[in-house]
Amino acid sequence: MSNNKKEELSSSLNSLHKSLELLDIKKFLIVSILYLLGKVYEGDLVKILGFSWGSLSTQLKMLKEKGFIDFRKVLTLKGPRTVIFLTDRGYKKYQEELKKVNILLRTLTSIREISD
Image (cartoon, rainbow, N blue to C red; front, top):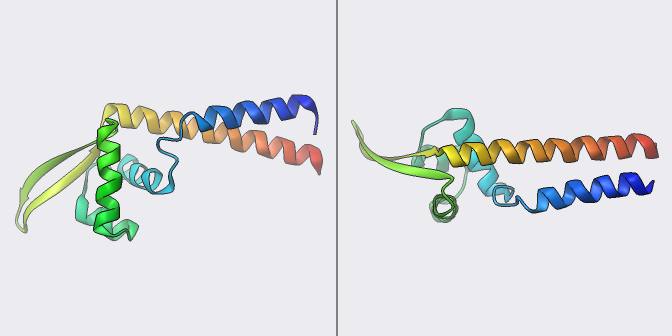
């Protein structure tokens, strides 16, 4: 591997490492679902992700503390529900991290093509 490619890979990894806030797999999955679906009931997130209530609650608390998501209590025919959604900050952060992951994937692909 050339020094240039090593430096490019190192730069990509360092950039990615600095934005690990959402790259924890559980947080990333939660934010991905909210990004794709918009507002989601907390109970639906548990069903979609297969997380325990405790695990989901812990992850949501961390995401809320960083300002990436917010909650709203709503009344439905089935009773009160908690709706979760991305904030503007969360939406922007998710897009930034996806760009960084794409850069890393392109870098890894180009390195692999050179070494093949």
